[in-house]
Every structure is written in structure tokens, then in C-alpha cells.
Image (cartoon, rainbow, N blue to C red; front, side, top):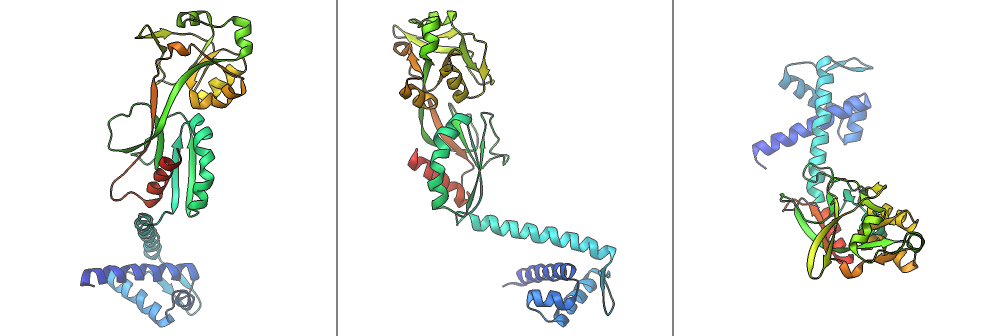
Length: 300
């Protein structure tokens, strides 16, 4: 160990000693905590005070009192030691899967596809604390709002790493009760006569795409209900409120149960949304992020 490293180690030890004195209230109690003699603790304080040129502690036979300078030094000691511990934990986490893992997922996909596979992951990696946030609003992974974000559709250029998890098609659905009451649309243009439920966030398309005679076209639709996730729109459609165009995964069970009926399938343009996990990659990527993304690729 060179002189600079030795000095840094000594300073860190001094901070630990001083913090222990302030917490325990005496040299002897601090010494017992740290495995040092009371005289060794006292010499450490003397050395700090001599180097700084100020008195940090007022000592009597019975009490120890922090001076104003001592209080300032204590505040700094706490901050430095906390930062040091956090830095070491961060480095350690790169090799061992542990720590808090913040995951952002869309509401429907998160509830229907991500949450059902988390039990096995949590059993496989019990030292990882899963922190799940479900919202169709986009989070900023680069700024630290999440460690992993599950995104649908085209990806914007960024410094993030992306791994494909799968694909999702779209389907137009309505309930048998709605169709019995208002009729079944046979052509895309028939939707002008129906209550079409839509998404309310900015990235939603204001039109529904179709394909007819080998040509793609977009049809404007209108309705009196909007929502921010496909699962809600699917539920509204199943309740007979109107017709919805949503990710097939979000209404697969309702279709299987007969609560929803696929419509205009011969005009489905076959548009597919790719699903990716986005995260900050590179050599410093924590192990908890790596194993989680690997797991999603494995099970999805």
C-alpha cells in the first residue's frame, strides 16, 4: 500500500472513530465498539484536532461535548462514510445480484405478463428487492427513474441498451351484447357508425390502420370514452360500452371466454409492436439488472 492509500485509509478510520465517539458518548464505549482501547481512541481525536488546529470535543471526567467545529466535523464524517459505503455497495452489486431493482412496465402488460413471472425470479434471487412501477407514462431511465423499463413500439435513438422481449399484435374487439344491440361492422368504414374506444395519451394514433385489397390505409374513429391502457379499454368493450383496438395479449382471456369477439380480422394490417427492455448497459451494469433482463428474455 502506497503512502497516499495509507493516508486515505487512516482518514476513513479516524472518521469512524469520531462518529462512534459521538454516538456512544465516551472513549471507552467507542473503543469497545471498534475493538480499540480508550487510549487509542483518545490519541485518534488528538491527532485529528492537531491536524485541523481546532478543538472538536470538550472533555471532562464525566462528559464529552461537541464543539461547534466538532458538530460540523461530525456532519461531514457521516456524509463521507455514507458515500463511501454506498460506493462500495454499488461496486459490489456489479458482481452479485442484490439490491433494489426499479422496474417500469405498462399497466396492462405489467399486470398480465410481467407480474405473473416475478415469483420465480424472486425465489431465484432473494437478495434483489423488486420495486415495480406500472404506468403507461414513459419514465426516464437515463436520469435514474428506473433501472429497467419495458417499452412497446419503435425505440427513439438514445444511449440506452435495448433487448427484445417479444412482439404483440393488435385486435379490434367488441362484446356479443354490443354487437347484438348495434350490429356487427363488416367493413372498416362501418366503424363511423359505432362508439370506438381509444387511448388518451399523446403517443396514441388518432386513427386505426387497416389493409384492404393489398393497400394500407388509416381510418379516423370517434368515441365517448378514452383510457390510458389497453386492459381498461378491453374491459369497457367487454362490458358493452363500445369497440376497442388493443394489444391482443391484453384481451386474450376475454376472447377465449367468449366475452369479446374479434372484428374485421380480414382487414387487420398485421402491425406488430416489438417489446423491449431498456436499461443502462456497459461494463458497470449492476448484476441485478443483467440477471433480470436475462430472465425476462428466458421466460417471455
